[in-house]
Length: 328
Image 1 (cartoon, helix red, strand yellow):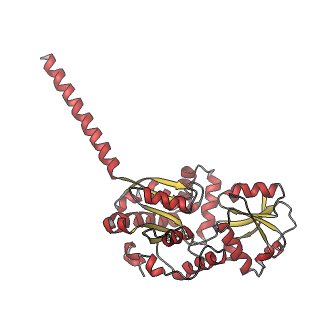
Image 2 (image 1 turned 30 degrees about the vertical axis):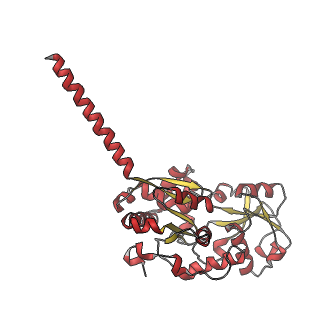
């Protein structure tokens, strides 16, 4: 009798373990990872962090469990193509470059629409006090034809400064640019939040790009046409979950700042300042397209040589996966 009870107990434990293993496997099979450029270092990713933290993706019908980060550009595009859920948010330049290379990618939503997180800084006490004084000076950018150079060129043009008289020094990164500035190898350096907030006691802000330039589309959501056709409901769920994340940021910036601090390992005060700075310029889009703001970005890409000719937005955009109210 005792042996029979032991056998029944052992069988029951085995069955429970099998059920638990099956449950974990099923959950893993339905979990998805997507890609976001500059994840963990830039504010592009905040809507995704909020949506995951508050369970908004699950409400929309998809379980996003992680974000694949990258330094941006082609790396993010490659991450997207290699993913089982090939969706990601990338810079507009990267999306257009991938399309020109013949990759079967399509833009399905807008990500961010402001350059408010970008700035140019000088050392404390620098005699350079306004953008016009950059003529004849050296400015550290991250890389040639990158977004930092593009925004610098656009700001110079808007301010009537001859870009040919401003030397651009490629540093390889924002922190590297600050090192050049500290060593007096350059007179100013481009910077981006939240790094600019972390270092605000060390440098003077010469100007903020958002104070010089109008709103423009800076990042977009992309996927493969094959995935969009095969999994339209999953794609709509990703876009809707992110849209709810954006609304949650604007509805409760303080809560969003707490999530940013936890997700990106920032000091609470830094995270709060970063979020607050992006609320007024309405950095994060719910996903709808604005052709005027897209063309402003295209103008910038043409200015730094990244883009030649016109962009046939109709051929690279598919807005049918947006909520109906955002398709106009």
